[in-house]
Length: 100
Length: 325
Image (tube, rainbow over all chains, first blue to last red; front, side, top):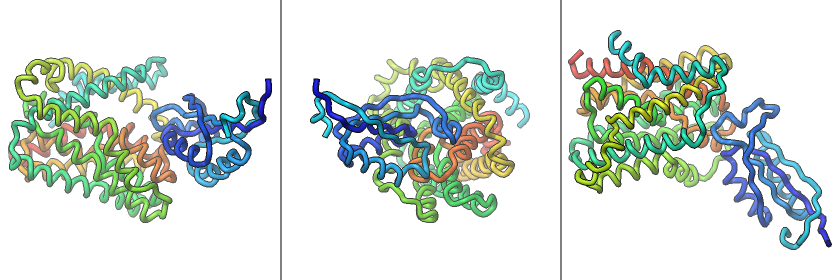
């Protein structure tokens, strides 16, 4: 089966940011996303779980240019102030046209 | 006064809270499932709104006008006094001062419910429209404090409309305001049918509140370790600020014509610090404010202080203001 190489951007963030992040991902060109809830602790020692609610992990599969835009946007607006992780993984997907 | 304190400390509500704290201290695996906690908070707020709405239908505009004005005045004063104290006496940064002030400007609905149960237990029936005052006090404090923080720290803010939407459409507001309207509309005949379940003086309501207080104890208990991080100034602030705001509320409430029970409840509202509506709003708008400060203050210091000793003190002040103590 033919597969298309694309990028998956993964964001792990505080629950208060979910609505805002989803809106911004759409604006930056993501066609869709998945959201999972989870627990964890990072360099800020459970800082993110101080507020009620679970951390959210948002995944979106996009083309390379959109992935770059998302990473630039996130580093500009979130890294300094929030418990926030963002990374990009190479993925190979079927039906690649769905994502770009 | 000592007798009132003793009665309050031995009430099922206070002891349920203490048990929750102890469960955390001894590291028990006990926890309340999130769904039960949320379900109970929906029940408590919805009952409060409904019952308040039924009583509101019996009130006249002239009865409620002065207490409403005084409530809005308190809503404007408490965030400013908290901000000034933290900024200039405590020398905290702009974001932390304004972030904490937003919590003290807003209201803790559970403190309100605890105060309501306390005064009814003391035989000082409060005015039926108290939940209406709670909804008036919920929002201005948060907005004033956040506005101070945004203006003075130059923080990149979100649009005001977004923040307003978040605070005005939160769970507390929908259930309380919605309940008030529904209660107002249904009339006494319909109310009689559902009263045993929603009566805020009834056994079901008070029993549910006890379970809820267990969870409040667990939440406060899990923050005890953070007490060391907040330092002596904030520890003192978390108890003295509520006393000042509470005394102001009891006095202004009495001046505005509220009964001893009503003035005590207004005092408890003024003294309380929000921990449902304010934290996410502050986190989003003033991200530089340290959540450990504001969450520990409102949950582990001010909430237990008000529920265990504050409310009986405000009751005594309200009695003095009425010349009955």
